[in-house]
Image 1 (tube, one colour):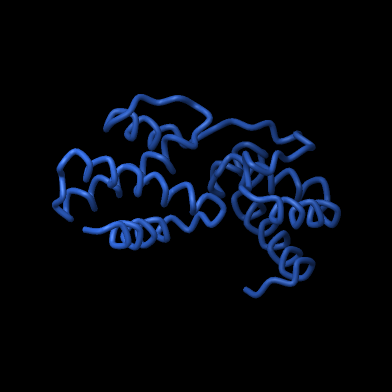
Image 2 (cartoon, rainbow, N blue to C red):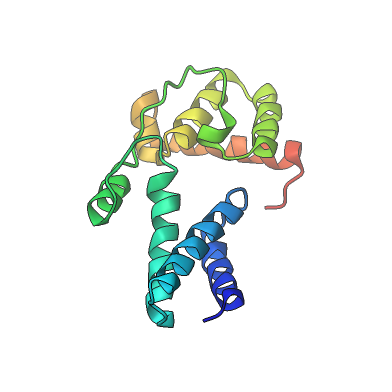
Length: 167
């Protein structure tokens, strides 16, 4: 594989993560690893492909985490198991890089926040900040699952009307 083949392969692999903000970093992780492997004498395309895929996975799912995990399979398993993170529902400021990933999205959420009631905003934070499902959110807020679903639908309606998004 030449340099252009490695770059094309890494771009194709990185596009599967739907992380446009860190796309270049993800691609560079794979390219650097493949070039190092090629310098060591490993030239089989399958080994380069699987190694680049693993490096990109570790970068996205383990390396970008606020917690530190060991490298290798043990770290990947630990990061997959550690998906529930407690965040205070009363928190007023939203750090863009922590929760939503981009400043454009943070601005849209701030506009939405002005239109939501306190109850809707609290549900929004509990659902999306902690990555909860409806059942977990209903337990946190001490309301029925149906009430949570109804409030969530109201939030979705406001989001579509305020931000002019297509459903």
